[in-house]
Length: 209
Image (tube, rainbow, N blue to C red; front, top):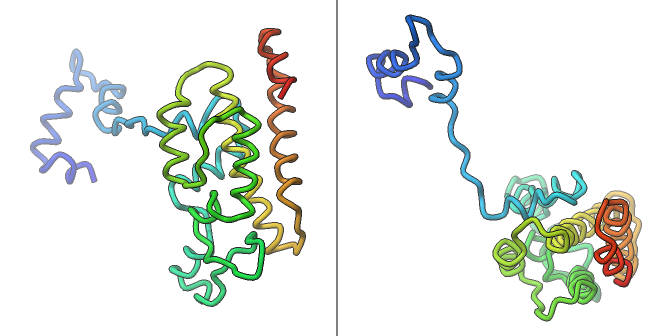
């Protein structure tokens, strides 16, 4: 792997020679050369925001990377038959194929939940399109301000609870209404936020939500 990266053995020796100091190999220098610099992706703060529950961030991270085991992905992996690719959250007689974009938030069920959360946060815009929502958050909800952190947290919590409801219906045959999911999202956010050490004026603003 090292030779593939540097081309040939001579180049490896040349690089290692730069790691010598007073005739001694500097391990830290070798590490710096061999380690790949990691570029920060645009969605990093959105997924790993400071107020997030770790389990919420994990599910959102998998969603961003399209690694959640949605039914369309399971069909591509030949684990499910195409006839089984339908959304368990859809309300009404016509069910749609389950994909990441459908679950978040094109589905009538999840769209209701997300619109309620946008209303709760006082957003004047509305979108249930995954790419639009993620781009908007990455560009407009950046920064270290408490309210922006909280709004990023609401997105991760909403994704988590929708995914949890989807799994509950599939594996436990238990169903909750969209209103119940909205309540779960709000409770999980408020329980975390109101235990934070925040200024009184922000606490009052959150308590009025």
